[in-house]
Length: 456
Image (cartoon, rainbow, N blue to C red; front, top):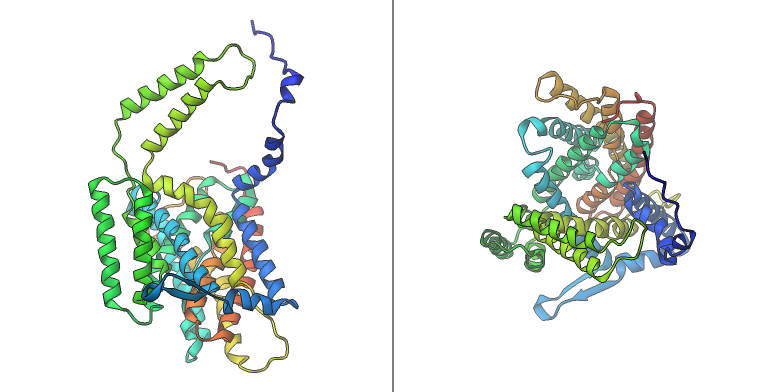
């Protein structure tokens, strides 16, 4: 016979701290998958409004004209704020990208040729076709240099839009889109390193190589504290910056040296956690909710420390970086880079920027869906891979449109491609922003209208 149901004590219900009530909405927001994308959208809109308001001069003064100097003497770096954001803060973003790539290659959806075939094929198609479309539109013009702009996918935005669909699509669609975006990021890194590096200072690059060698040795010797790798990583970032290679590449290189495994006495860990749980349980007086005792708090703290000792440095650093990147670094990047002043009636140099706008929009809105969907279809037909369980071609169609959301990576490459051409840079930014909105809306509609009830 079932026992009596527990009736909550109203007095105990009122003991919930006011701070918990106030913070609960913010905690739920921070846990939302779409939150990072929402913040990015808000910052991009704010940047556009700011750059086209009567405060536009202040916008340019803050991000583009004001210089910040860090260091002393020959070691000093003096840059406008926007370059500190694009060179230093974005290096942290690329550090996170590198950690994700390493994790996926070692044990994720890119860990074997069979697993990686479909997303890698989709990523290649989604880079080649947009690049060719942009090149065709800008052939013979100086703006041809921007061919890499429409090749990038913004993983935060794309997954944010996908999260709005909810359970209407299988979870494996998210895995496919994530793997595609990570492979796309890897391709973008190669493009940045090879095609958007002007001059290389071999001496500084050699110093950076020595720093990487030190990190590899530390990994082999068993150093597992991520702080050690970050400190040496800052030095590597400085030398890569001075070498002429874009400094963000340092973030990826450092990520590849951070340990992804930890040697653990698994039985000892299990026994220890069981003992701590027993100590916690021994302090339970009855079935009613009560405040934890100091003994229970110590047990919880011991379990937490043991968990950190078992967790790999790569996983720990990745988890620590995600909120900083999603809610600080990328929004600041969007605020500094998405502000494009739309000047009506300025006829100087209009022909060249319009080629950029058309090339970027066509590349992202047409090239991305065609390239991703087409390459995926070819890979399946050739037997190189197969659609994940319960995934239909309409899901791939929707995901292909979401891959056309370029935003962060596309804006970043635009800054590299058109660093000395302000008109072309503004045109590229307009194209990226407009195309990303169109691709996101169409992808959302396609997935919302897709087959229902095919959950993982």
